[in-house]
Image (cartoon, rainbow, N blue to C red):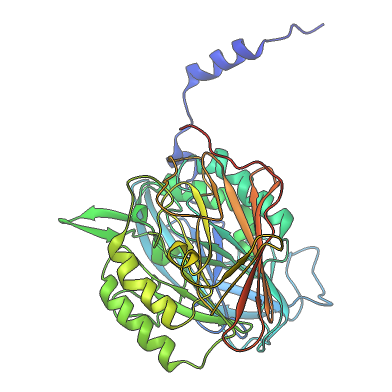
Length: 440
């Protein structure tokens, strides 16, 4: 009989070896890794792929084909009649050493179509993955929303990302409201973020807005992480100098807007007002940014953000604001807490709140770092000490919101219903799950 080793003894032996260095664990190779889909243009006809290799790979290729009825070659791993598109690359030096970052932009795709693709240099390839283009008209879809991941991403955030996939396996995209990592330019932390999501980033596009932890002090000023641009390929239709952090795009009748609340917010407020005035109205408009209009945690109020953005959200009838930063959870009714006592109706029996098309504010956290709750505003549902993820489904006149704990248990829910022009009803559907107000 082989002698057993207790868990305590095994842990002690392992600790003598020390942690495996991130620079080795996440070292680049000639084989593409950190694949991440995103859009810099129309989601119905384009798709961008970003990835990484070691510094010696100077060729950037993508092979792709419509995913139905493909004929694969068992010897080469290729696909018969696949198109080939050449991308761009740039040398990139991190705190862990040199590598090369690659971007391929696929254009002229057919709306509402599933494609297979792989990236590489012609010799070393990624696995084949699938993605789907959006419809070019308004159709139902679902997406995921994550507050701050930030800390212990590999060990404790990974389960959240993967559990979210179980609830929305056909999500159109995954939206991240900032602070994906803790240290802006730490390559090992970006490696953890990519590993935690794994192959999901290669098949479900990422929509990201930067948090304060995506900024680092450089030459006397805070500067966006040098990992941001080569890791994602996002729209450049925002103010000059804020491209790929402040932007908008339309997805199947819904408008998504990202604001960068880390800098030049007055300029972005003017841009938002002008942009939403000039664009044809969308059925639904959702804005994401990092620093909340109404904070969920104690001593973290953002009066400048509120003063600049809330009047614009009211003016343009923004439906939802998806935020992060506070490492707690809070969700308002329509119009935010200020409107609860002054505008609309509240039917306790039916759980319905009616108001003239104002905004639901959500602050959430998906990672393990937690702060105590604030008690300064009347939220419909709050939580502290709880990792959460959200699914949001839009079907023409209806928006269904669900917040889940990391274990997959439903924690919060409501439905927005649009009827006559300008009229929106919010139906509360909060489950019996006890409210999480943990002492921190």
